[in-house]
Image 1 (tube, rainbow, N blue to C red):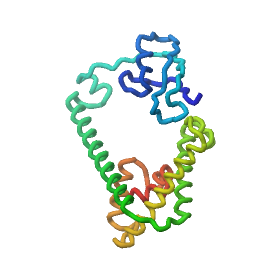
Image 2: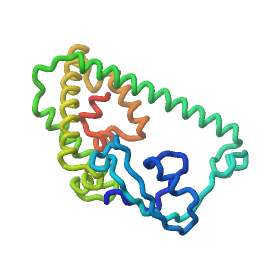
Image 3: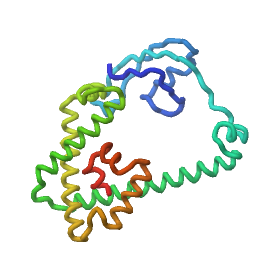
Image 4: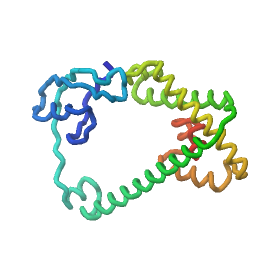
Length: 230
C-alpha cells in the first residue's frame, strides 16, 4: 500500500530503490513476474516502514540497453554535429549546474547562520499562518499533479501520518515566519524594496533557473518562500 507504480523505468546501478531491489530484478526476462522480499533500512525516512519486511511484486515489461556513444548517435538522437560537441555542451551544463548548486548551498548555510545568531522576541502569528497556508498550497499542487484531488489523499499516499505531516508544516512555518521577519528587518536597514536593483536581479536569476514567471514561482512554492529566498 502506498508503494505502487506502473511502467516505471528503472536504470540498473542508479540506486533509486532500497538496497537489494535491483539485485532482485537482474536476471528477469521480459514478461516475467517475481516477488522480491526485502527489508527497509532502519533509518528509512518513513518511520512506519523503517526496518519493516515487505514483498515487492514486480513485472518486467521490457529491457532497454544504453546505445554506444558515437558521432552517429550524437547527430541522430541528440541533435549535435559530433560526439565531441555533445561532450563539450554536457560539460558546460554540468559545470553551470555545479556552480549554481554550490552557490545555493552556500547561501542556505549563511542564512542559517544568520537565523541561529538572531534573537526573536516575538514572531507575528499572521506570518506563521501565511507560511502554513503556503505549505499546504504547495503540497496540494503537488498532489494534483500526481492525480490526487485532496491533500489528505496525498498525505496517505506518502505513507506518513497526518500528525507527522502537521509536524513538518509546523517546523517549516516557524522557520519561514522567522525568515520573513528577519528579511523585513534587513530590508529596512538597507532601505530595500521589491523594486530595488538587487531584488530584481536575484528574482530574474530565480526565474531563469526554474524557467518560470514570478507568478508561477509564487503559485508553485508560495509567496513567502519566493520572497524569503530572493
